[in-house]
Every structure is written in structure tokens, then in C-alpha cells.
Image 1 (spheres, rainbow, N blue to C red):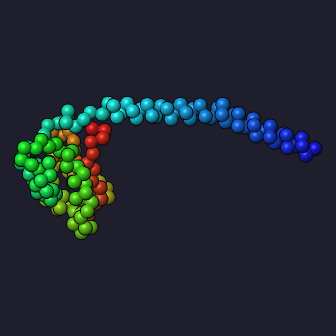
Image 2: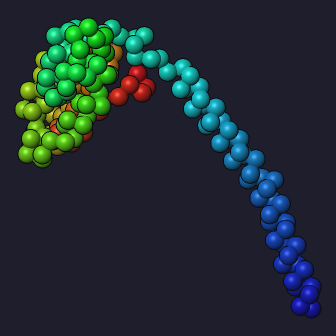
Image 3: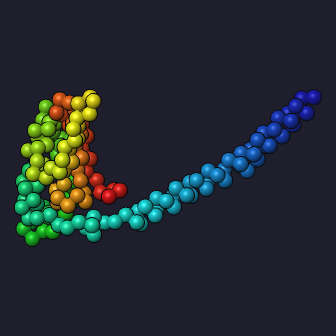
Length: 163
């Protein structure tokens, strides 16, 4: 009797594994493969920003190098450099993230990015709002800064993905 019960349990276990292998694994593999293919296509189709926008004017490059404290020896800050807005995104995000809490304000953002403002939204019901900036001014690669009702920023978005 014990052997028969044990044999039935083993049979049920084998049957369960077969069902899982037959019905569950193929769709999971198909979904995974589809996502991998989609990601590869997205990367292949992503337009490089230098093909979509034009270099920054020299005055903007000098302004940004100065405001972000980038060394004059940095290749972007050299007199004959050809620089695009997204070339400064890492420095921009690091600068704003590195400020002490009391300086993470609308006034600070305006001091740095004010010349490049495109627009600021009206505050929502809670009083929060966002402003959009564009270093080039062509609307291709924008920087989003989100503020609380107390004029402190809580998010800075500067990315080329999805652009």
C-alpha cells in the first residue's frame, strides 16, 4: 500500500512537471525572446542626438563650463570644441543633486538655467509645478525640473533616451 501511494505521488509530480514544461515554459521563453528583440530594436533605432540637434553656441558652452565649475582644460570647454546640450547632462544632474538641501530651490535653478527656460507649468492642486529648460533652444533635448509648492526641486530629468 505504501509503495502504491508513493508511486501515485511520483506520477502526479511527473505529470505536474510535464504540464509546467509544456504549458508554462514556452510562453515565458517567447515573451522573454520578444522583449530581448524589442530592446535590441529600440537601441538600434535610437537616433543619436548629434544627428537631431546642432552644437551649442560658444557663449552657452562658456556659461555652462563656468556655472558647473568644469575645468577650462576639459575637452568640452576648450575654445574650438563642438559641444551639444546632452554633453552637459551628467554634470548638470550631479551639480543639482550635490547641492545642500537649503540650496535646492527654484532660485538656484533659475540662477543656473534661467537663460534656457522654455516654460514653467502652472502649479497643480497641491502647489507643485515643473519647468522645462533647453540648452540649445530648439526643443529637441529638454531638461525637466520639478518643484514643490515651497519652491524646492525634488527631481531633475535630463536624458537623451526616448528622444
